[in-house]
Length: 493
Figure 1 (cartoon, one colour):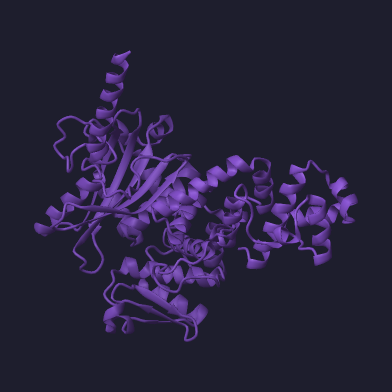
Figure 2: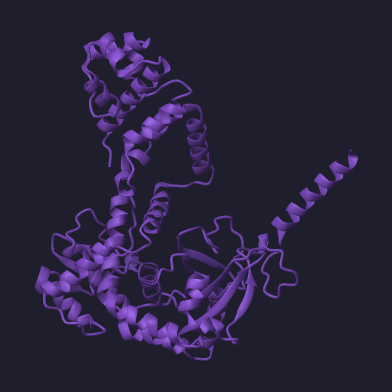
């Protein structure tokens, strides 16, 4: 995280380097002209030092500009987009080091081809403004990129979870009970759980939990399912054992004002999942599931019960284990929310590993493909609720994306929404089908497995006579009309 003072040093260093290269001066030549050592000049350009006024004057004379230009935090039109980027929260708050990047190296690249870099940066700023991309959305996308970079597997947290159980002599008894987890918070960290206070305040009904550090109380909403309760308790254990200080105290981060806070939220959540579903045990369960020659939804549902976790937690845990232990890196995870009386769906979570897969989050108010197993499982769940049947269902499907060679094995779990919200939620794990997937999942050869051609949204889909279409293929029609124009223009010649 950069401070304002560091940003000012970086701007000064960037200008110095740019002007030196424009004049084709080496460090040695500029050193002779200014009386400043080459190492000192190098530190200035890297943003490590900010020279005193007399030295700034010498630099300005040598570089052919005035003093005010050097110390100003703006620049010429050619350099201004890069200056704007330095002023933006990108450099102030985004931890480049987490991605193996160096601010100095990036600025070095910027000064080599400023015209092209400026055009690119200006484009990014305009897109962000036009589509109202705020800081929180940027941080969320950055976190997903961070997860992708590590294949969503974090061995240090897995090891920390093992150390936690070993250090406190916690035996592997599955599933952990709510009382047991609550006891760990009390005995190990003197944290008391309060399940009454949140429910008494009408304006806090959407908050599932809140940790108050001064009184060391974890407020948990009354009436949660035990699986939800367990996750909140386990995550607080993660925050405490990992000694995370820059953190959110509420269930979901309401104000994402730094990448570090969001990353720490992810680390604590990862710890909770690893605690409730141990790495060694979940690997055994995955192997047992994949050895079956036919799809057995009851096996997937049995894992929800075995670990006493939500479907969301189970499938997200698989995105940790499958890439690292089974070599299945081409996958996606999505969470879809729909409401009882509306044929409208919102994607609230999505994660893509190795590439940008379909389906993906669409912010253009288009209609997600109704052929997705994510959607059909929600419809099936709604019928089940009406008939007073199971409130959690598992389904799977091979999805072939229209006009591509891509086929995905999609496993979906659907459940009722949170505390009478009249919503339904489905979570789906999609695996790009290749030889490795075929070699691991025996039930892929099951002839009874559902197979459907799908697309991302109805507006962009040209599947003829789709029985599930929720909107006309307007984007396809627009492209066809434009193609007709090109053909007409060609005939004029």
